[in-house]
Image (cartoon, rainbow, N blue to C red; front, side, top):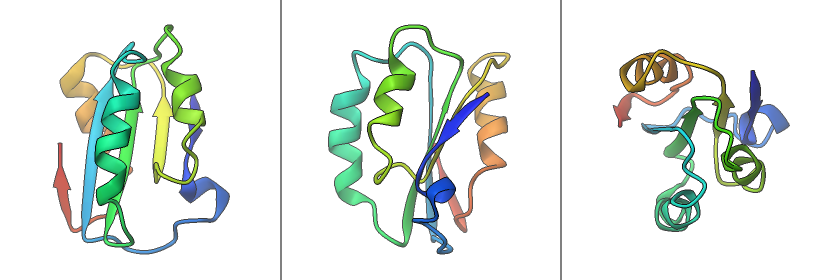
Length: 99
């Protein structure tokens, strides 16, 4: 498993009210636009968790380029979109979770 984000570098130790969970697989073409749109809404009260299904198209490299925006991300094989969503909930710290 590969992982990263603000939590691992000590930059996000707050308890957010909302966790936005995004699950992806080979999303390198779409991820830059998505991150540009969603990161402007992030704050101490809103965190972003991304779970990648072991992409092979450069998605992991893109995730690594946003260490100050993404609260936590991990890349590992999963059993499909619903399995990935269930796994991602373990990393949510918010009182509310949004997929």
